[in-house]
Image: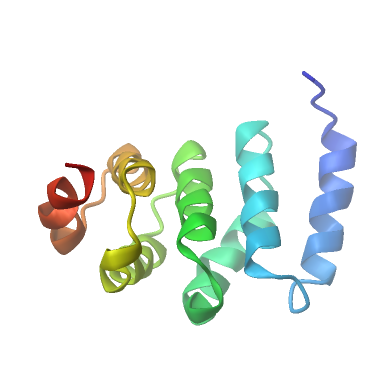
Length: 128
């Protein structure tokens, strides 16, 4: 709808940070993606979740990790440890990969100039 209300997004970010241990991974991914899409990233949230997402990787699904990678890529935050864990997770879930997820992940990695050798090497087999 074209609304970029910084105050509302900051209130949302504060609430997410306050409830960070209670939120589902999909919710975290959506909030990070909203901040990135509106080009108003909250540095505290992004710093915290760059550390938290890898610790809670098993709770995420492929879609939420695609959103997280996209959010960090949109903001230009090349969090190498985060992207490495996302790449590892995607490779471990190779049977679940679908073309859009592969494309999203490859684009996100490329935007922040990071590479995950196994993911990049095997990506063509998941797109064809």
